[in-house]
Length: 452
Ligand SMILES: NC(=O)C1=CN([C@@H]2O[C@H](COP(=O)(O)OP(=O)(O)OC[C@H]3O[C@@H](n4cnc5c(N)ncnc54)[C@H](O)[C@@H]3O)[C@@H](O)[C@H]2O)C=CC1
Ligand SMILES: O=C(O)CCC(=O)C(=O)O
Image 1: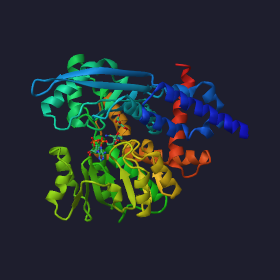
Image 2 (image 1 turned 45 degrees about the vertical axis):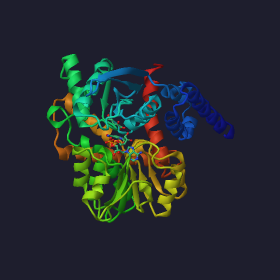
Image 3 (image 1 turned 180 degrees about the vertical axis):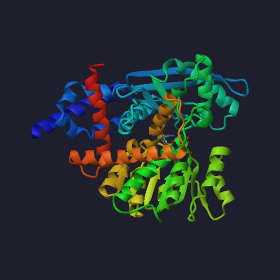
Image 4 (image 1 turned 135 degrees about the horizontal axis):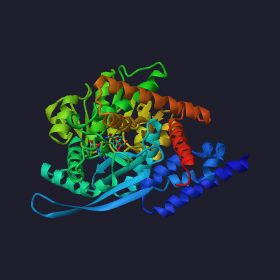
């Protein structure tokens, strides 16, 4: 028995070593692979057919990686050159699906970590979507409307030949919202001469978009936490919540917390954080971030009762529930210890991999419930799949119906994580439950499809 356990460990170690060797310097990708492999011991033990067919080894190698030049002309007439990426990771369950990120930190390792996470997240939704991710090192900050449009058009001038309703369906992520999806869709339509609505999601409501897609990731994360609370006979009522970021995911997480009776007392952006003990004024954040594209510090200029802190961590603010909704590795081990000391009981990742491995360890050791992003933030991509359904049937659902579907999907993911954790002897462990449940569905499809 012990010998078999050691063999399983050796196999997983061997696969991880190969990932390190093949993908040098891609630290975020290594981190995300390690986190998944760490959960798979009991599955490999129970199902040797997965390793016999090298399912895990194949899963760690993207089906296709596309890197391309994105040249464009800025407002001063200067030619700029950025780099574009699309990593098509797994199409075992459906067309590649996942967002595009425009941020100066983007390189292959970030796109691959995000694409890898997306395989398991998309599987957890129970909807027919594979995993992929893309983006560019373009920095939209400080760029004019015209510059953003010309960049998006140049990006799509290459990307269009790799995507399609049945092939690969991108959407938004950091730095890519409704405005950018509009420019990208416009250029795709122009080049292909096809109104192929299902090629992108996150579209505007008058041109093929879905109700609730804008809100879906943030709302979904809060629905997930609500399910955790409900399973303990508790609710958001009167709970103090801290959210990091103030972009798409953060804004709609804050909105749903308030609707369910909780109070968000702090949020942030990359320049610092604001604390408003009376509850963050969401209309003000929306005005600053969605309309003016301003810094969060302006919040405190408008609300004298609020404080802006430029240096420091939003995780220093005491709360019962923490929702990291900004970016990867933004919450480290020492921040996690501060949260624990201050009485935080639940952490749910609205962002992708915002908690470092040290942070996750600190939460687990302290008995804090930790919901990983691939489960807790799956509401965004799930609603993208609902957008694809509406596009395919040329239908358009109401806000209420779509939100109801989102709620059902998030409750389903929550329950599947717990049931799977129980089945594999790691009761209450959402990380293991999410990784194993997401993995087995993809692995079974890969076995059925042969060595491809
Ligand atoms: N948009 C979506 O549907 C989904 C997004 N996500 C993830 O959620 C996270 C946020 O994405 P979005 O809200 O879409 O992007 P966004 O571009 O709308 O907002 C990002 C926010 O994070 C802040 N931020 C970035 N770096 C920061 C740092 N180091 N410290 C503090 N704040 C920082 C930015 O100032 C901004 O407020 C990302 O990890 C993304 O991958 C996950 C699932 C779906
Ligand atoms: O809606 C989508 O396809 C993308 C969502 C996404 O990028 C994510 O789940 O991280």
